[in-house]
Amino acid sequence: MGSLTGASGALLAARTMLATLLFWFIMILTVASAVMVVVARNILHSAFSLAVTFLGVAGLYIFLHADFLAAVQLIVYVGGIIVLVMFAIMFSAHTQEGTVEPPRSILALGAGAIVAGVVFAALAMLINRLQVPFHETTPRAQWQKLEGRLYVLQGNPHAPGAADQIKSLSAEIAALKKQEAYRTTVSAKPGEYALGHVLLGEYLLPFEVASILILAALVGAVVIVRKETR
Amino acid sequence: MPLPSALPLPAIENLLSGGPDNLFNYLVLGALLFAAGIFAMVSRRNAVGILMGVELILNASGINFVAFARFGGHETGFHGYDGQIFALFIIVLAAAEAAVALALVLAVFQTHRTIEMDRVDELKM
Image 1 (tube, chains in turn blue, red):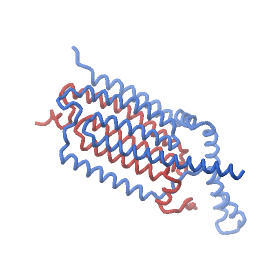
Image 2: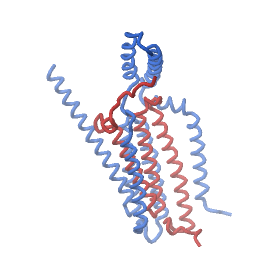
Image 3: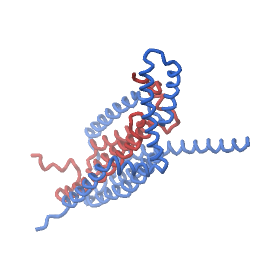
Image 4: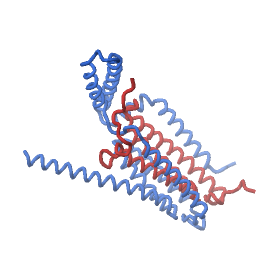
């Protein structure tokens, strides 16, 4: 038995290390290809780098347990938007420069660097100041913790303000248990089931409005590019 | 009586708990993609290049939404899928925006025979 648990422990460690390596590989790939999108002189190289960035973001969605979003990212971005971008590049490449962009002026590069640097610095400061305890937590862990405090309070019911605290704690535990029950009914199935449940329940109106938006975009795109014939 | 927060730890240590797969890394990646997109939008001359910057920014916001949905949703009363729904709608908007913007690029090319934004200056005297 001892050797068995040792073997499974080693397996788990190997899996964790593999996941860590994969995570950093995808992170670095995403950032590097995003930089390539920005600095490449040939706009076609930019488009290919953009495809790699989208692939990296899809991989990160899988790491974030958003499998459906990863699939949508692949289908819509890599399969749709990149192809559209390629088409636009090919259609508009009949100039003497072809797909190579003429060098950008120092002014444009400087302005871009300053704006991007300021935006990144502001975001980094905000991230650094995040105070809320963001961590993966379940309602069960929370109400169990609160129940421990409730137990302590009930052992000493004559302390000042204890009745009020018991009342508020009980209400909070009940709310958390309700949340847990909802999540177990929803997440007993795969995450895609829960996502569909929420998308076609709570978010039905935005979902339907999005279809009108897509129709409008479709018609608008055709109207904009069609040749005037009369 | 308000309850004390569940984990009164300083920010960074809290965010970095749990290996490399933590909120902090995703937020930094989102900020980097956002900055790269802004840089492309400001400095690119090619209209398609500018559009690529916009796509980078939209991806950055999607990453942020999904990361917060996984690591921060439950204490704010959301059930962890709202962020994913928002990312989904961002992808829908990005697709619609790309279709219209690329149509605009083609329309500009038809009238000006170039898509360099410096040279499309018909309104200038």
